[in-house]
Amino acid sequence: MTVLICGAGVAGLTLGLSLHQVGVPFRIIEAIAVLRPLGFGINLQPHAVRELYDLGLKDKLERSGVLTERTSYFNNRGQEVWSEPRGRAAGYDYPQISVHRGALQMMLHETLVERCGPKVILAGAKVSEWSETPRGLEVVLTDRQYGYEIDRLRGSLLVASDGARSHTRKVLFPDAGAANWRKSMMWRGVARAMKFLDGRTMTISGTKGMKFVAYPIGDRGKTQSFVHWIADLPLTPDRDYDSQDWSRKGSIDDVLPSFADWKFDWLDIPALIGSTTDVWEWPMVDRDPLPHWTEGRVALLGDAAHPMYPIGSNGASQGILDARVLAREVGQMGAIPDALWSYDRIRRNPVNSIILANRNEGPDAVLDAVADRAPDGFDDIDTVMSEAERREFSDRYKKATGLTVEEINAQPSIIGPVSNAPVIAPAGD
Image (cartoon, rainbow, N blue to C red; front, side):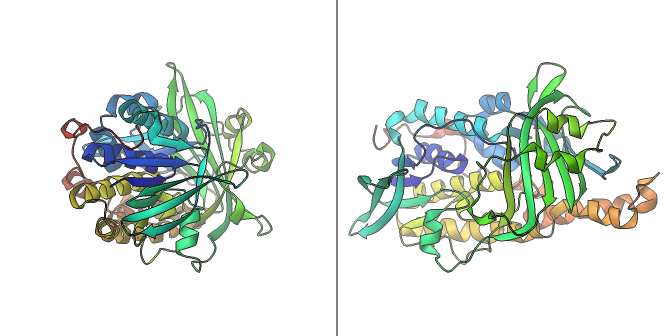
């Protein structure tokens, strides 16, 4: 009844912890030999935070990140266009948390090893192929660098959580086509900086053609924060965007000139960029929604199932929700294809709706609408666009993606708290 999980990212590790909670044996297969806390900042929406709290991770999660209380939108002069509360400040039962992706991944990894033992993760191995057997399937593992066969594992199901450029997705959907590129590139970095605004606010400035996002992902004493920033700029189509991933190094020189005069009274953006040691580049891409995520005993999870534009703080959160629903269905039905199809039916259409909503810029579209009316800034935003009209951009996105306060608070926990979970010896321990 073992579930084989391909990928030890946030979604894959959450699935492992969730399967352990419901008493289902599993193994995680990770191509990277040694996990390191790489990456950048991500936001976890309240419903995803609830699920991590249910896994007994509340204290660790809150120590790892920042409880975000507000999102504020500014034009390219640093003038506030729209601002609204987030998390508990907005009335949700759980907070929104901004955290370094690597810190979250390592916290999940360490917790999994504590609960299940180190043998539950097979590192340095890549799933290259699989075949169905009379009682399940057999997976061929190869060395990531040299390609020789390492081992073969048997299991009941294979769940591919191997990221936006998933090998498994390509095998299942060879005709799905290339990624959809929005003709822009994101540069990301993390830097130590003085706290700005209230120290708990996510900021989005500019327009679709030139946007800068900044938010704290960790405190550094009373006056400083670790700040994650994203610079989104248009790019000519001569870049090899489809072969890139989030671990590709970028250059400050590609970013800084475009924002050289963005010195606002609440944040000096060129100083923030200039103080950054490592910059990573990531093309603004998504992929068309799939007609199904499951094929026989194989299913896609997280970014492998639904790569989306990083708008609206939904990517990592949806992967966590995927993991919890899949674990619940397997726990209730057994490690059989019907459990995967049940997960598929529950999750696919709602998440595909988010992919499409993000293509329309989500709540960020308020910035473009205001810029069209007041390209040179304004003295009073209410004379440019009413508060009700500005709020509508946010409300429309929340309704389209199921993120209204009422809807999220009305949802029960997917599995429930981890204290109710049976204690089992995981496969490979």
